[in-house]
Image (cartoon, rainbow, N blue to C red; front, side, top):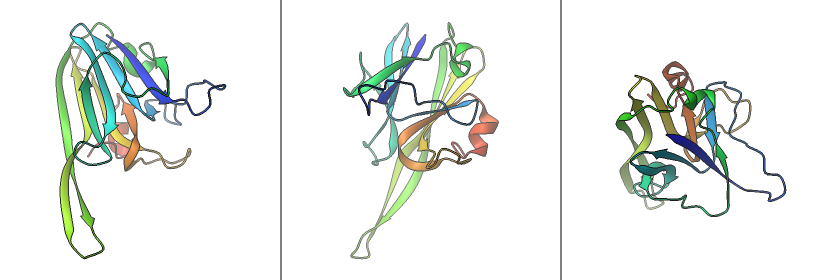
Length: 163
């Protein structure tokens, strides 16, 4: 298995990774993650199939975003212990959001907020459509066009990636 992060290339002259955070076991990706396994390539990204800030899984050969920079993060601490392991399950955590319109009507939608990927070595990765509003924040906010990744369930719960 290999893992690549795709980040938006805001400046074509300054291509440096932006995924590291103040938390050692949390990465923040502003577009998508590609997992390449023996069964193919899978993209985890924020998308709007159910709600504009949900998380999605695509099965295809390359990222769906063209203005990006790619980082192979397979040997980063979060991912290194998973190399050579099989994915044993994927669990999607759904959340609800209520939108109130100017005319007073309300609409409730259920959407995929986070994904838990379990591996054959009994380790898990937590990925949520969320982000830090500011660099020094200690909690993430949902409903953002960003992904937060951690391999530590205690930290994932502490920063409210998962409930």
